Length: 259
Image (cartoon, rainbow, N blue to C red; front, top):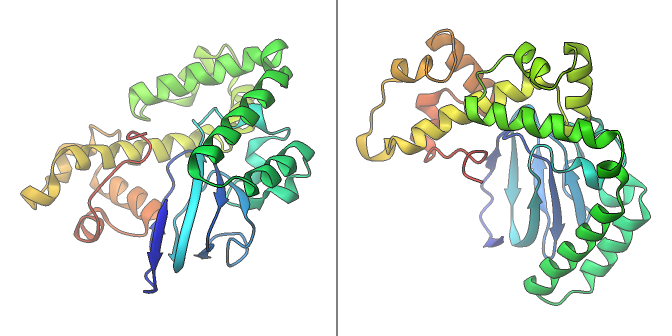
């Protein structure tokens, strides 16, 4: 992203089910209301799964490159349970991993976007090759979580945890623990995020800005909600707005299902 503005205008960040690695090449983005420090002061940071909204303020010349991991994709690159960074933005230096620190230094020496992407790809591929995750018992859990995520995507978040546990050949307790370790939050919260992201997808595909109207009742049961009140409360928890308020301010877009 390349962005330059002298106008202070908050941008709403909403949960969408993925962990991110961000490398800043310009000014940092000030963050308001998240569980981390008041601003992204470091050049390289990892953002864990977020379970609620917060606002950021880009001001000045913002230039950054971000890796958005698939829900199960961050685990092979970090040697700690991913849920430990939930609702936090962690500087790479705080991860206490020499390989990540070396990568941050190498990225700082890159001169353009192409060289940065090449550096990222080469280093992450090397980390993946060295990781024993796919050559041990843990690889079985990796396959289980990938299978569960694929089923969650297919169901748009409407499948229940017991069915997911059965699919993974695990007890509910085992599945909850392994899922949080790999994905960064428990499956119940992840399913809720994917369900509201599927609602955003339906709004996105309905061309709501052109029609200027939408019958939410038609979408309530399609997205797995009990009733309209359940949908509104869930949506407001994750975005800070009711669906009608959100539509007036933004063009609906599901980041999760648009990746």
